[in-house]
Length: 98
Ligand SMILES: [Zn+2]
Ligand SMILES: [Zn+2]
Image 1: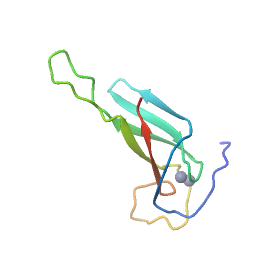
Image 2: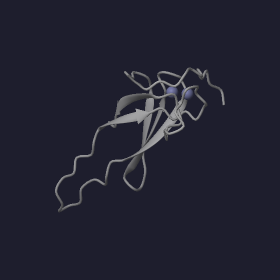
Image 3: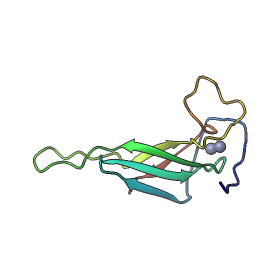
Image 4: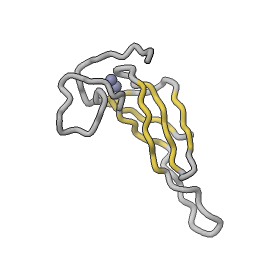
């Protein structure tokens, strides 16, 4: 995998994200968000449940359009707590499901 991944120490911090990302809806009404971590540059993809678009009769459900992505680059990062379920560097950032 060609990447310029930065194996920085694990650190939980929110980042502003202005890079490219892709949002891929699937048949279940979920979306897969593919981004590149702004901290370590690892690629990460996260699935979000946004719910099905409302039916003809039900109340309109407005899915959350802004979600928080947590880095899941899958690379080892020093200082990552063994108790965390995260598999990235600790960075998190928000993207719009536009
Ligand atoms: Zn990483
Ligand atoms: Zn990262």
